Image: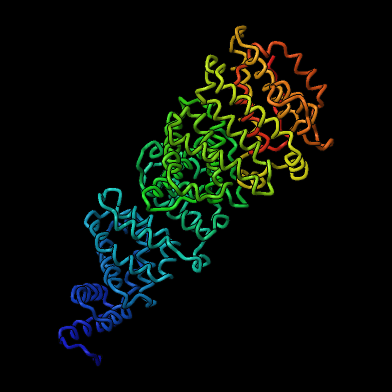
Length: 627
């Protein structure tokens, strides 16, 4: 049969007509030869008509045996010959867009995906991957073909079949990976969730068996797509196994200053997992807390550096708040961690601190709302104290600037005086690293004493303020922490209790190990005594009644004896009475000669963190005593 066509080259006509005639003959050797000749002749020509005829008459049936998995058959010469011809045919069909949507072309895709499911045993065909990269990119630009690749685990199988681990420059392979796993939401219902779940398990097993980073990279790329499509529930990811993989990846790269780009996606995937309403994975062990704090620290540090280099913008998003809460709890737990088993932790946390240090020096942080600035400084100051970081001149300038802003802010807001306790909490940390009170000899100097008096006065006034008391009574929350539990719902309550109870025991042990110092001045003992009373009051109750407030202020001699400026407070809501408080605390005779003020400052911070951040206002330390 002759075809009317527009070919100017008579030789093209001969090749086409020969190809069509042979395809009708059903003579297998001739058909394969005709396919090869057609590819050779037209491979470097752009001819939509010829391309259409090639696909239309393509002998799909002669390649059906390539679906066989019999080992003897797959090693035969005829099998390898057909396989090589199929690879050439795939590359030819998808060298351009001419036959992209042809039904026979999709049949070739299916056979191709079936063939690469097995390991390649013919070293001569290893070179095929070079000619397949661009055709695959074109092939999967058509969404049905992309779905075929996803359903058949095409990227993983291609990697295995062509032994890509031995290829030095696999950039084109990862282009394929990115192209396939960039499925838009409109295509999320087209692939098989069951198949994808099995593929993910296969990749995870391969990584755990080999520790090959390429499998980790592929896994994270697939999971990124799933997270973007919001299909974690449908996939039913084995999160415990993914956690095991995450720790392996982190131990390899988390200690390094630079790392592969895929590593950064680990944090993003984990946040999506943790905030998923159906999430069953809980941070319920110290190991999980430490590793996820490390993963989140690395990610935040990377984002801050991008912002400083003007190649990104750091925002205090809800996800970043969740990350910082996990890191904050890890900082609280830091003293109890066996650092021989986590030698990398301090360095990772220091790196994050230094990134924030550089960021805080820049103007953008001043553009944040006062609430978000508080959230950042809450972490940052905790990090300074926990990691014994040096407070440089810029730190002092920015922290003092923020403290001034924090004290001025309430006068413009309905939250008047609610920031007094927030301020006292942050300031309790800073006093622990303050040069003026860090040693006994410095404590007696006027500057140091003035800071202590001011701190005690502010703290007493903060926890005796009527607005503060009513806020706790009606809402059971401190201002700025109303939504905290939504950010930490994935942290198990039992772990939080363990962390705080162990911190309590460490502080008590530290207190009892310190020798009594009979040389302490009366004013030092007075401040210690008053501070210990405040610690008990805040722990056992949540506020001070008027009589106790007056007693404390007189004891510290920070206010005159008249009480005209002391407000009337609600008589309901739990509070330890003045007489019982004084009676109980005076029984602790040994306290006044042993307690050091910095130790008590740590208790104030710990109680605040337990009641207002990670626990609730009814949380308390049951074994708190200074005797």
